[in-house]
Image 1: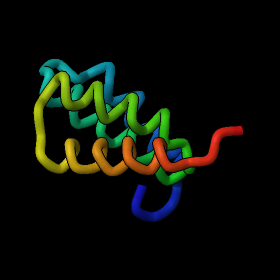
Image 2: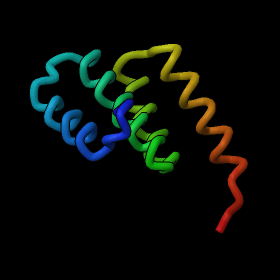
Image 3: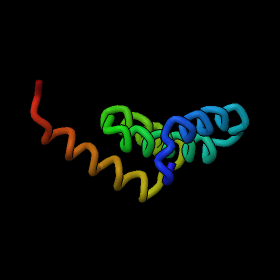
Image 4: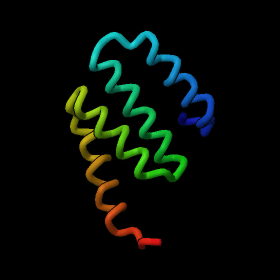
Length: 79
């Protein structure tokens, strides 16, 4: 992800879902998928992943990212 290889990062996350056996692991993967969606400039998709992550494992970092996205989505011009 940090190297900008979003397709590879997404594939790795989706593969990790197979072995994710706890809510914490699933929540972490959802967060990572949200970060990838944000990097792709897909804020609505990212927010969905962040909200999933928060349902699975409440976390201040994820909450802050979700709150920031909600604010930016509301400010976007409608098409």
